[in-house]
Image (cartoon, rainbow, N blue to C red; front, side, top):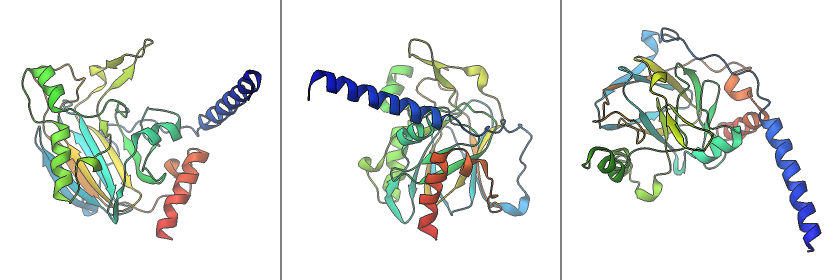
Length: 269
């Protein structure tokens, strides 16, 4: 292929990319954040409540259609999360595709979290924060050593422990999403932490779109400037939901969302 032909093909690919990006960003209007006193859970809908101490982790099994509320009770925690499909844990969370398919790293109410098979694992149906991290990941032994001068409990170790309890290993641990981690990038591409975006009582509701095993780690985010780590307990509430409406915003936000949900629903047809 000649240099001119290569340049023409590159230009055509670039135009196609820009067309797809523009179409992907023509989302329906995403809903406003949930109020801190909004979206109460009826007592008879609660299946399980658990508090996770600072530095610790837990696993929760969710059935399709149930939801997990994660509460940052004191406004000092960041909560890292992994998810695997119960029937086949080789299908698991994929943060890169979650960003790519939605043309955004900003996870908020109305968005979805995808698997590595292009299906929808979780939908963000309530969210007071809108300050979550899909890019940096959780803490490690090295990051805690660098931050605090000693190796402390960390998300990587927690996820290895959580995976071992369900028969999985290190290779089954993909990059995670971390809630209540207010990370953005500046004009130079550097990560910036926005402490003012954290509030006591912030919560997010995640609707399971398939049967899931969810691992949750309550460790300080690697970019949290608090020294020493100021993590506090968090609360998890597993609860039942009514079926989603036909115009459910997570299912209809974009053409990509409609396709991902159609692919997911095939599993349960």
